Image (cartoon, rainbow over the protein chains, first blue to last red):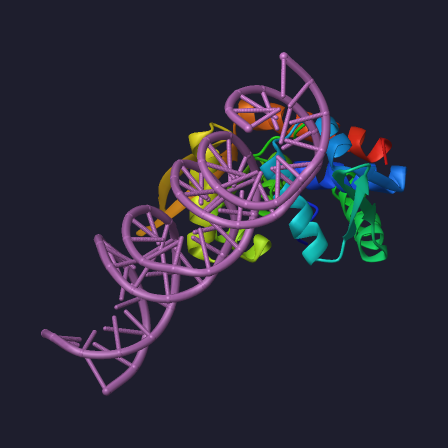
Length: 93
Length: 93
DNA sequence: TTTATATACTTTGTAATACAAAGTACTTTG
DNA sequence: CAAAGTACTTTGTATTACAAAGTATATAAA
């Protein structure tokens, strides 16, 4: 039984977890909480968006660009399954 | 908090888990249980051995080569920590 | 008895990943 | 208005994860 390869990665699982408990988060908040470089976060977000696990909304805060990230239903379901898989793995060990 | 990159991989975590509950296992049994190709298993074993998570013993069964794999103390400890990390992650979610 | 097939692996090649560095497009500040 | 800052994305690269091909020996078939 293989774990979901999209979520079985330290940064992405934490990222998705944050989006589930927060409804929406800006790029900067994610970057700081996850302690990653801009480029690294950008590529993880692109990957999650491509898989439709999250949605990315580009807005403005005053005159500055602002990227708002939200969980998508597919991402929420995948995360729940992933947690169940982890639970089962732990129970077996 | 990042998960141990050696263990945070579907095949390797399952492999190490098998070694913890089995004391020792031959190459073939691992290959069949994990449902991987020879090459893939070989490289995962090499990686775990390089990290001293496992030990690999080359013996013979009759005239045929036989590779016996065992958990090493470092691997056992790392696995226990990894499980604790997973538990904590689950509790937070 | 050479030839083929099987066993038990390891090495090599390659596509995908994870990351930082560099780049883009502004905006603010000295 | 030049320099520095903000908010990202794109590019380059080292590392992975995997299967295909290779190595070495053993057994079976012709």
